[in-house]
Length: 280
Ligand SMILES: NC(=O)c1ccc[n+]([C@@H]2O[C@H](COP(=O)([O-])OP(=O)(O)OC[C@H]3O[C@@H](n4cnc5c(N)ncnc54)[C@H](OP(=O)(O)O)[C@@H]3O)[C@@H](O)[C@H]2O)c1
Image (tube, rainbow, N blue to C red; front, side, top):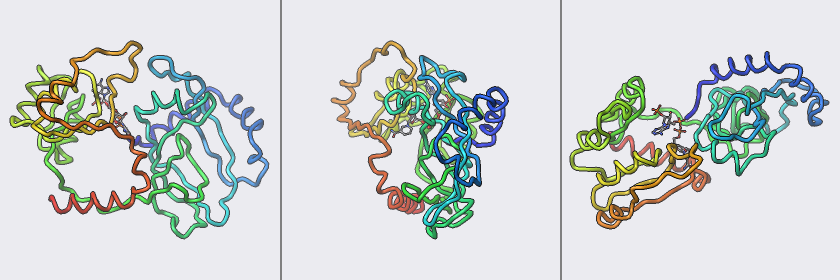
């Protein structure tokens, strides 16, 4: 999920107040870009220490980096939303070393451009991690599409607060419930769709998954996107296991990582947009 950058900006200010001298020292000792003529200071959240159990404030450090002016073919991006995502928890351990800028996508606005494909004022999705400003040569940027339709597929959703449930209904979910306050997850799922489910977009894993699988229809399909209920475990959780539902309902379950189809992002967004318009 993308988080409004204004909250993070407050956090940046707080961190600057706490560690300004350290930050300045690190920047002066940093790479050669500080010697170039600078236009913008980028603030970056770095991983100070690998997470142990639940992430803590002290695992992060705010640093400041001087950026040069964009060259021909480059743009200067300013982050509007940063993604603070569950996958960062397990990925940080295998993809990052201490001292790296936190990984992740951001929605950014182009504020200077020497690349005609990305005019000033356009918005892009960029994988530049937790940084306020970035110079990019355009590689890997996806222009944000406008005119998303208001209506879509028939869906059941749930969330952990009543405010989020209300938001799901505003978005057009046909049924939505608070999984933390319902007396029975099984009953809430059954009441929302008495005939069962053709598709289940799995983001949670664990007990939620155990409640959902028995309610799949024959030949149901499960896209395993995430298992957030498992990420902070220090000892693995036990089943119920999936096999009997998989066999007798002849289910298809496939895990995926979003990067598998990254090269088709633009084409996929246009196709999804068309399908949603057709369905509305
Ligand atoms: N496969 C991929 O390529 C890929 C890419 C991106 C994300 N993901 C996965 O997609 C899922 C959602 O990511 P996101 O970016 O939307 O995250 P997000 O915005 O941070 O939302 C995560 C939400 O999960 C809920 N949650 C946390 N612990 C839970 C638990 N034990 N049981 C049930 N719900 C729980 C919380 O919502 P409530 O407060 O409402 O409970 C939390 O806000 C994650 O599992 C993530 O790992 C996968």
